[in-house]
Image (cartoon, rainbow, N blue to C red; front, side):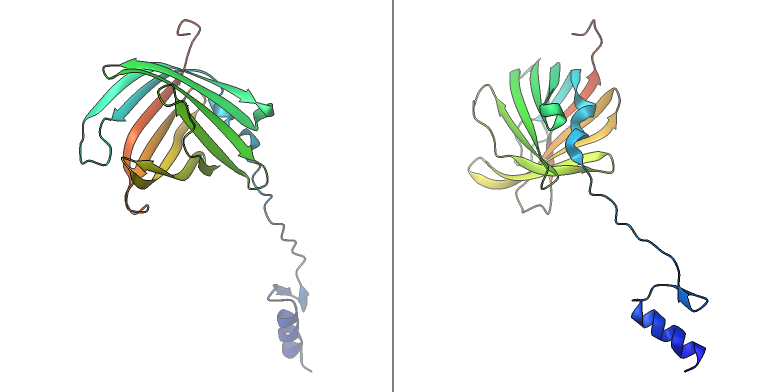
Length: 193
């Protein structure tokens, strides 16, 4: 058996590992550890000046928006594995009061976001998702005006003292999305609280 045949046999036997001087290179491949998202929402803890832009008539072709300004307070629960989000804001279209409960599933390594406002008093269907590359995206089914739709919630532009949240609806199974709710958060100072 010549050296070439021996080297080829080693490559085939070693599953294509690189060969150096007739033997497998000492290569240890360690897969990356799965992301532990327990503290993904830590950036959002505290009190925030909150500006909301809301599309008045989603999924109707309308482009009429209204605005609200208020305060959001986010508290950590279960050492970061959950958080409670409280919102109070007012604008030309009225007064908003809402609460969100965010829960981390350590087995799935995903969050589920649950929301309600004071006018309905029951939780919406949860949005399920995770954070990747500095942004969080969450999806779920819901109904709007009697139609089944998909909803996407996202956290973007995350910085120490600001972030952006967007909600979008899809009536065509996720082919197209219409943004209908935008919240920008700026960390409140002592005089803002």
